Length: 390
Ligand SMILES: [Zn+2]
Ligand SMILES: [Zn+2]
Image 1 (spheres, helix red, strand yellow):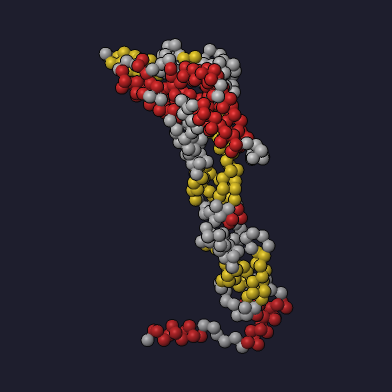
Image 2 (image 1 turned 90 degrees about the horizontal axis):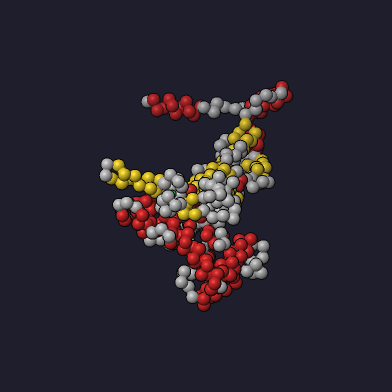
């Protein structure tokens, strides 16, 4: 028997039911093969892989002899030999056992769609009726990433490596050494449970021979020591939209764990952290910056160069008599909004007071004070404060 067949659902690959006619198979195959043909999708590895899958599935299912063999192999391992009646306590206990194992299977192989699917089928028979043959949505996953301030402005596509529990890649999750397959555990008949009698009640407990797997491996896979468990890593291209805020949780539809039996993929949630910037800040869709200007520049007016978020700089005209803290707006240099329009760069000037003046500078400033005959700038203030006293 072809071991690969155990973990491949050729019907799901072609999106047809198990009793599909050969005409139906042919039609589906042609559509999918045309869609994914390498000539039509040059350089698209995904399409190429899909094309191969589809071709392989059709190769087996279009040949009546191979199809029969495939169906039989799948039926044998998907629970044909062990209907769930083996439990003491009848249907109720069987149902309970079934759903309990479901949880285990999902924990171990939740992301796979491969051997998890196979095991799911195995145990679901006990719980009543091949539920796992139905399409099942993949799990939602969560990941985290940190973006630079610059990348947060216009959005960016980040490759995210996701690792999850998956079937062992060497034995494809069967736990059996290459070239062998596990057999149904003879102790528990594949149910994964044995019963113990205590005070007239029957308790189900995990089968000691197979540790609850329902399968018995004669020749364990050296890579996973027979557990069938491994880790899979895949890279997802996560599109982070422009203007993402620190701490946002972004939902990437369909980028979670793959669905099973043709079910939809789960979603991937990405919590995004945005690094602070030494110069720029953020206010809604505007980028902020504080720029020092000298007293003379503020008083006399100046053209100053201000760095902009995406590199380069703009010239901002500071009019004569600009007061400290005044903000100027440079249009379109901010964050890209949902409407495709950019926010602005808000430039706030901060008048720098000279700290270490040379004698020459001090004399010049004194001369300035004398020349302007600086009167007391707080004169009105004292008058107003005095006036309100009554
Ligand atoms: Zn293995
Ligand atoms: Zn067992």
